[in-house]
Image 1 (cartoon, rainbow, N blue to C red):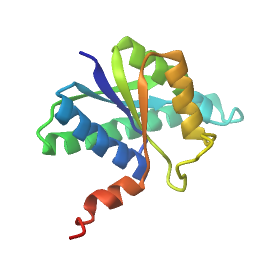
Image 2 (image 1 turned 180 degrees about the horizontal axis):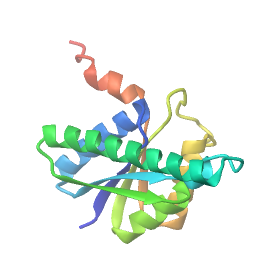
Image 3 (image 1 turned 90 degrees about the vertical axis):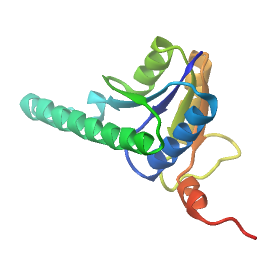
Amino acid sequence: MGSIVCATRGGEGSLAAQMVAIEQAKATDKPLIFLYVVDPHSLDDDIDVSLKEALLAELNWMGETLLRIAQRRADEAYLSTEVRIRRGNVRDEIARFVNDVKADTLVLGAPRGTTANVFGDDAIERLARWIEEHTAVAVKIVRPDYVKQAKEPANR
């Protein structure tokens, strides 16, 4: 049985993705793993090496904090989860990780301000398409408005 991986980075899209991943894990009884990737390439090359290591340590700390928050959300839903941090290029590390854990689903949160694009050419959709092409893993993109919809009462 494969697992569900939820890559998280903070923000409304990640919250929505976590909610969907928790729901899917409960419905399918599949293991859920929250993943955070620290990308050293996201820092400017002009930064002093000693400062760069300090910034990477801060990003790692932030990732641990975000993962603990995600795990607490799952705990509140009576769901046991794992958390993992990787360091490297986000796209490559996510692909490597889902292969390593033999995941069958990856859940990604879209950044705020993105909308479902008919042509599939925004960054999150390109990332999802690349991961699907280079792994055997289905990718589900969750938009931030999912949180608002989940909180609204059903119309009667």
